[in-house]
Image (cartoon, rainbow, N blue to C red):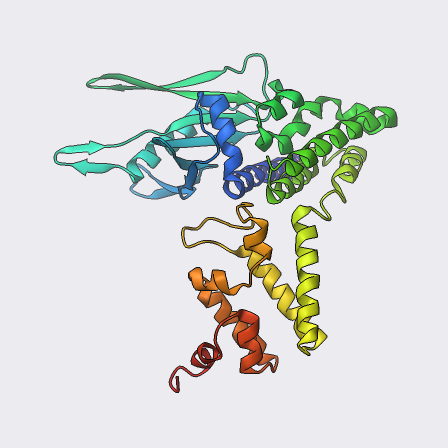
Length: 379
């Protein structure tokens, strides 16, 4: 009995890994969602559209008057030529209860965002789809939910995307890069063979070397950002850890291919060159090495977390040009809405003993502004 419980717990934990990877990819690299929508729904998104994510927690009303919290994988709206809502779930294997959950999620989303106009409640059911990481011949391409009402029957389709039906060539050709972290599922049935046959394992490793080389080229061609590249590799490692948990040689063998490939990307190289140049400038100004190291680390953290007032991640989304990212001082972005971050760095530098004038030069604001931050009453 205990073994059965352990096995069930392990399955739940692994399932959570896949859900987490899927959510992380869609939210952090939302641009990668658009080609998937083109493939599943026949859309014609160009990649310039804005994706707005809805809260993934919904509270379903129960018959006893209570509420039950449910977590959806991905609910979002694409703002393009027209505005469209989507509910796109990820499922490790076909499940008879999935349609019930899709119905619960979609109707709750519709209700959450519904509007009462006069005597009419207007709700909008999102376009629904499921990404099946595993599938069989009997797995349908499309499912349907039908609602019988006093005014007649209403139905809507739930599209099914079956990962294992795609070759790696099709994935690259159709720009379905979001599927790459899950591509290891296509080899799952041969894990036992790979785990006991080094020659076969080498073939699998060679396949992944080619995949990563193709990703490298896409970064060079600016079809993928460095951040998207890193996320695809990192999430691929997470999926590998889950799916090959019982196959140590597979896990380590393919993991070695991932391991070291992201140590230095284009962004890393550019940042390293930029930080070396700034370090020399600060040394010329007589700053201590400890202070310089602290400042550069602060800048790196700020770069990785920088967001515009509209919430778009600049570095992580790869939207900043080389000139705007590395050719100007931070003050330009502070003046554009990041004043609070400059102020926080200023206080940290003061705690380290740096003078007001030096702090002003580092964060690129006037000395009077620094004094105003430190002593607003006197200012």
